Image (tube, one colour):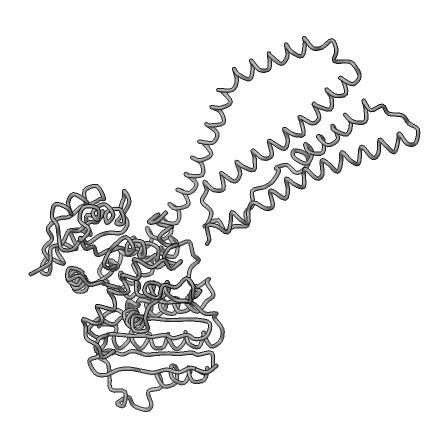
Length: 355
Length: 213
């Protein structure tokens, strides 16, 4: 889906531009024609030998000016697409195609003007004696073209190769810079803290997450706005605070509204509990299933578990921050646990319609 | 008897690590570092299970599965990777791997997964279960649905959700009141659907990885 959309978005403006140039050329030609015809009507007599070539030349000039005049670089390559999704080769191809199209348009304008000149000369009888000279010139130009063609060809190839190489080395420099800022820094830290396994594990986890985001070309979790992203961010925070591995599996997604935020906060609380009381027993699993109508989160640890009835009433963690919070936002929280079975907290948020 | 295993991974350090960690539980009968060496190694050793890295120079795990399957279609593969990109995972499963686990798996779990694949069962990690639920989520126009292949049954969904929540097969069986064998049958059924269904999410992944043209 991401691959098809950009190219579809990219072509129309250029085509529109091309159509625009054509229209402008025709329009200018017609304006000049109208002007000359009006003058003729007023009695200022222009012969056909002037009217038609002038019109042609006007169209050609309009094309060339639109192409090469005024705006510096014609038809800038569109950059509306986020850079991460466009391969450099793709951009280069686009630019090349645009350049070729510009060349055609310019060439068409030149041909129009030269044609207008020839037509003018011919109509005025100036070409009659020039046949031989023209032929000589034509042959000379053809010969010159044949001689120079290989050089041009090679020049164009070299330029293209250089350009590709430049893009490649830019890419490489960017990758190198990123790895330097992230992975190398982390590795240096890991070596420094080699005696502290917990810190090392945390550092490695953080780097792993960051690198994965980068490889997938998506912004860091903190900059994404959705329920699944907020859940990831909460898991990352708890992971860092407690040094416990948390595996998040999320299916679907949901807008990050107030209720979803409450659900994330409750999840975070459940994760903190799991990390505190069951962190030694292995990774904590988070599974979220979200649809526009319903969001469900399971937080499961492999800890010792406990007897629900045995929790003293003054322990407000679960009661307030999880069960109470969910209830206030029209959801529910259930704790499944038994000694030796681990603990699973189930959080559900329905849309309130026939749940 | 311990299952025999060939390890295919381009990281020497990883191969050595798996070899020593699994030494008690499986017989490592060979290893290879790339597609070219892996195919003859597998065909020569005829192991019960091939532990296969997804990303390797020369075509990756998918290419190994393809080439081996031409000669030895019954060969069982367990894919193993640091990647958790859905298209990598789905691609290797659709190519024919019987399971997928990430390299962060503990060695006890890995040994268990190898044994399971050797027995002909499927191995789903929580993440893979999540991908599958994602891929089979949403409804299709009724005319296009082949219920045999394009939809999960309620029970299969339930089993996958439990896997995604971090439960082991035994625990799932206990919770759902069915036997462990039934849980495995459900997972195998899901694997079959994953490999044969033409649901567009799966097809899209497959096309991106050039599994089908």
